[in-house]
Length: 131
Ligand SMILES: [Zn+2]
Image (cartoon, rainbow, N blue to C red; front, side, top):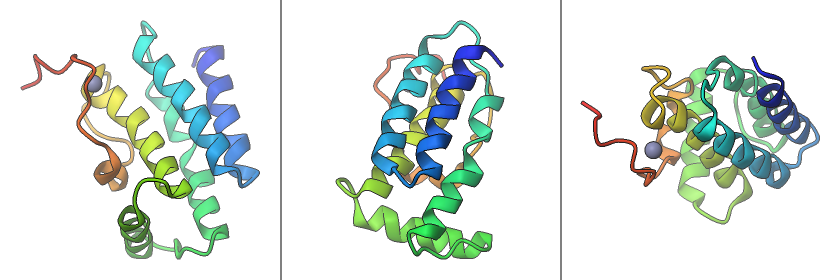
């Protein structure tokens, strides 16, 4: 992991742990730009944020103790829609994930498939050669 990715990931994790979803969303936006532009984006970097994301949802009163509960909570957040801080946070994480899989194609599979509904179609223009 490069120093820059790890410091962007640390910023995001710090904001998640501080229960600052807006701040975390901004940090994920910076991470997304970096992943988009870096010559060798490291897919492993993103994996570290998941536990803090789930912890934040739990602290905000969502049920997250198993996959089924989490899926229900994410549905609820998704249904609340744009403007809701946790929706925008989930979308920002999903965009980082999509950048690695769909735009850069450094990995073939989403790290967080549960967040796929939060990702709008990407307009980066890098998808023309996708199968
Ligand atoms: Zn793209």
